[in-house]
Length: 407
Image (cartoon, rainbow, N blue to C red; front, top):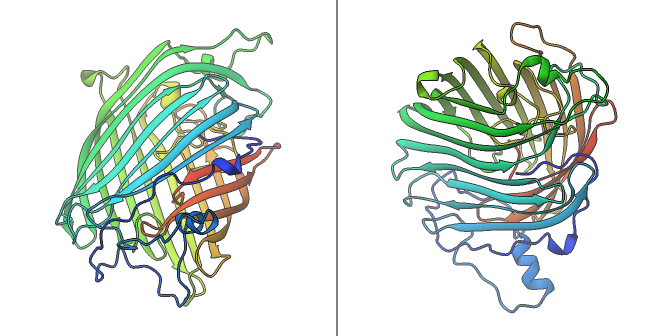
């Protein structure tokens, strides 16, 4: 998903789903597909389109996710100071590999900006028919001019240094059910940056990435080992439960990596209904991304909004903070505005801290906060369009657009 910092104006006429089908009834006893018990009929944007434009009678075969896919797509356009004009299309596909399987999801998006930025990420989480295996993947291509601001979370926003690069990534993990809600697995990941360039600085001061050491081409390639505990009721938009993921990554020159280095990610989430008998949710998130050994290439260091789903750090432009260690926490309160579930709201607060180069200490804690609007794109898969306006320090602010809840 393309992240746009500063002011982003959505052209409301384009903010519509163009494909949204619920084609098959799932198992009504499966807790992962159950809709909220509500006396008010639930609505989504497809329902509203048929009503507003008088498209005639509209009925679905089911309001649940079944074996046949449920598609959601959102085109949009806008303007940002970093990208100038931008157009993007985002969406997801939700389905089951068998009636008793958990919901599988494929998220996709593509964007092109007036500054020549092109992004094409595809992420998937696919369960097999008996839920013994979970296949998780991330494939993306970026042609991505983007500024960097140096290392650590004490950097000044005015020390902006432009960079340009092409980037391709592939990550695949297979998790095997062990017991209860616990899974173990392993995988392979490669991050390839090439055509890395930056203009000469007119200040006579070397940018942070030059001091750190950068090349025109870097590769990080290695094996991953993961453990997951997941008791969430609905992975797409959880209202209760707990999720914890630990991943160790070991990059090796024998696998094509530019250097030997290792890292770890600890991703923990908890969801409460608050108040208990309401549809409102308090969601908590902790995301720690740590370099354990070696010296990762500059562009592979932990960075704001460069987590797996590019969601950690609302209130700041992508890449605003970068360093060898990243510690991040967020709380979000999600509440209904309309009783039919079509419109909701959120308020979020977060905090992040980064070290500079490997071996240095964490620096200043940088907070972010803001309100958000939720529009129910697809009630069958419980997918929202998320519009959030975030504020950070040193004047950072901007609108953030996503399909699906951010965590």
